[in-house]
Structures are given as structure tokens and as C-alpha cells.
Length: 414
Image: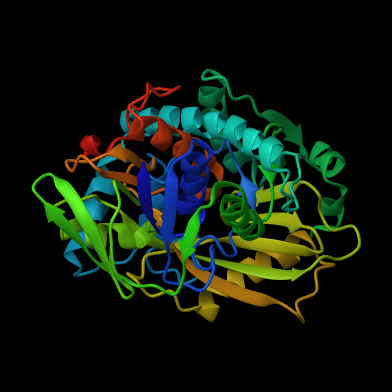
């Protein structure tokens, strides 16, 4: 089967790997000059399989209201006249109900743990290196109240097969000694041993090269995707700046830009860009090895070889991916408070648009067009979920039964 994949971020490249490994002829079309140059470029580095609580949850609503006029808030959701933002926001609020949040947690946890196994298989098969660390993720809390609130979610997820270890303040320091010099209060933490970290940009670029060298995959860079042509219930081609491209099947993996093209086909998939920020600094002596999540600030910190990445905050700014210093400042402050040894003289800044669904899980699989498939909407968990979701996608495209249930992942849920 000849397959065209639209987009060369981690979603597109993992899809190319899964399909290429099964003998399909794959072409990936990307407007940038290389893979992983947008959302997959400088993310937080976490493979947080057990982080399955969706943004839409009962605790989110009062916080969103509280943060609405706070410039350095972890989540900035302001009123907008954008009809797609309004529609997405209403769906988000509906998904903040306890029952729906628990349903989304089950779906995301099931996909996350499945994806962990699939990434291990990719790592074993390809032998690519990407500063991978299997040292878990430690969520730290500045207050006992915050820790107690997180324990409710942890207990629920434990009933689903994902155990997190409750740590005292001193046990947090034992788990990651670099925290001992923190100037902020740490009341305790939750540690997940199965979680990991790594450099997504390096992984995606090396995996793309592997696909070219081993499967004969073709990556067409510097090419704008201008439109999708259809004939009846099939896609007949993709119009690009390099001309018309045709194949037997097509995969939409354009992240936040997916819904723009899908709307031209009469498909209304509620994916909206959630803007995230990150900073990268040189690693210092005794920089942390365990990936850290500051739960209060919604900032994650990962060691990536000779550098340290701190990423976080969420902002709804439509399709504006420009770096705003007001959103960088709280990340710098968080990293400095936890690790006073960090040096910011050679700091790089980044902002990206994460493709967020209102309920949390991504959108994978078949559409009303028999040869168009979706692999998009992974939000803040694209690095975590893509290896697993790409495997599901390949099964669906080949007409095979999937290894885990697809409930809550299909486009039909909208």
C-alpha cells in the first residue's frame, strides 16, 4: 500500500515507522526543512505514561477562573471571539465532570502503558539513542493540600493498574538528591517508576533517518500542503507546493493544523492549539537525573544529556507560536527555585502549539473517507502516546483487530 503521511512531527514519523516496518511504501510531506522542527522540537522530555489525568477535570474549572487574569498562571484561558475556540471551550467544560474525567483517565492510561511497550520495541529494533533515562518521574508538591488532592487521582489510577509511590519530603531528596538545595517548600511527592525521559527531537530525527535507510521511506521537506482533493468517499490526492501527490491511503498527522484542512472535507474534529513554552540550559554538575514535575506550577524538568529542559504552562493564543517573555519567566523561576545551581546565560527559549482535544485523548483511525486516517490531537502527551497510537493506526489501516480497545480514541466520539 502506498501511503502519504501529512506532517513529520513525532506523530507522523512514528506512523511512518510502523507502516514502513510492515512493508508499506511511505512518503511523509513536511513544510519544515527537517522532521520534528515544530511541536516536537523542544518539549519537556517526559514519557509520562502514568500521567493520565486530562486537563478537563473537576479541579480545573475553579483554577481556570482563578488564573484567567493572572499573566504567569499555569493555564491561561481567556475569552475569545474565535468560534472554534468557543466551541472547543464549551466541550472542555462539559468534560470537566467527574464521570467524564474518569473515563478519559482510563483511556489515556490504557494508551500510555501500551505506548510504553511499543516504544521499548522500537528502541530494541532500531538501537537509536536519544538520551533515554529509565529513572521514573517524580511529581513534587509545595503543600500538603496539593499532595492530598493528587492522592485521590493516584488512588483511582492505582485501581486501574498504575501505581505511584507516596514520598515524604526527605524521601523526595533521597530519590533525587539535586532537590536538596531547593529554595521552595516541598511537602512531599508521588513517584512513578515506570515513567521515563528522553530527547524527543533527537528521537524523531533518528527514527525518520531509520525509516529512510531501512524501509525506503521518502521524506519531502520544505513542502506546503495546500489542500486535499476528494472524489466521492475517497481522497484522490493532496495538493502541495510541489504539485499533486497521490497514494492509496492518507494519514493526517499535522497536529494543531489538522482541523483546518479537515474542515475543507466537512469534518469538524475539535482540536485546538494549546500553546506551550520551554527553556533549555546547559546541565550543571549534579543536575537531576530523575525527571521532575512541579505540580503546582505545571512545569516539567528533564535531564537530556548535557542539557536540562524545563517546559510547561498552557496558553490559548490561536495560531500564534511567538515566544512571550511573560510566559518564559515563570518557567525560569520554577527551575531556579528547585535548582539554584542552574545557569541561564546560554538559555534558549521555545514556544509551540500542542494539538489539544477537549476531553484529552488523541484522535486515531478511520474517517468517513475510506482511505483517510487520523493520527493527531495528542496534546501535551504526543511523545508519550505516539508509539502506541501509531501501532493502533497501522492495525486499523490494515484491517486488523487492535491490541487494545479503541473506545474513546476514534473520531466518531465527536
